[in-house]
Length: 439
Image (cartoon, rainbow, N blue to C red):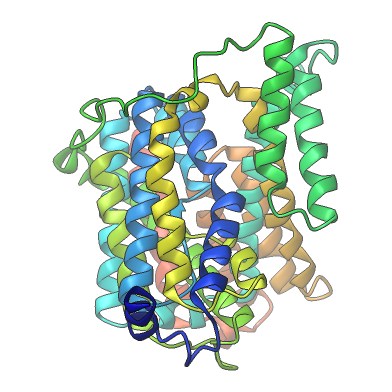
């Protein structure tokens, strides 16, 4: 009874018209909908040369740290974990395509997170969001979705490279292609039927089928957590603080800014905590927590940390306070002892989740005013340049420049906010003075 009284006072449960039991159920529900990240994130960061077993542990640790901190400091029903999209950008583009070491890439994540923290401290964060037009915000999120989907298709072998046509359809008789496609449709069908654990079910089913086919070997369920020395504190801060890394750092900062801020507003709105302007209680504390979580994550070897939209599943079953987030964080700590399960998940089992994330993120294109080409063209350019250039940075670069060109060319230059003008000019300087000298 005393414990319940303490929780009542700490999380103001009566004030939010909720109970300990409801918050615990909501926390467990949220955990089930986002626990897939502890299996997917090691798969993705493993491509960058990072130890997957260690990344499994650090993913659990930072998800627990961010979620518990959000619950205790901001008292909001929002859980945090490494961001889908930015982990793929880090592994496949920054490390894979650009040839930057993962240690230096983690440094770029750190500086991007520090930039986000400074924007929060000086209250510039929401000024940026308010002044970057909808077409560019939608173009960025949709472009990331297309890039993630392409990575998922590639990992499953559904799409392969071709010297004549650039890309081609893979071998549809292979286990990888068939199970990757099956995994995606399991998620899509279950999600359309409002099954919150669709992604987790898909990963489990495809992994079990892979085991039956001999692709996966059973290595156990429980074990002591592996040492995290392989990735923790391996960050290269000095090497990443380089002018050639400016575009990458800016990309991490800008994408995380939109992703996390948008999710915080969306989840708190669903919980009935946000007003018409998107402001919600303890906003300042929440923004500090998500910024600090990304800074901490880079030090222990995880990609950018963000608020998870899956938190809305917990809100849907009654979660209204930070107790929900704390419960979710505690469950992530317990999962650390299941590292053998993470090692068994094949790449094609996670591919379906990547493709599905692409579906969710590109759905926002419906918000674009396609009849207004000064808005449609920048959104289109931003979205398609990310998968076609295999770079979030280039998509953002050409999107901002396209916005300025279209507004100037049609005499609507007054619609260009100072924020957009400054960013577009910085990108032009980057192309002329940095990219040109690297060719």
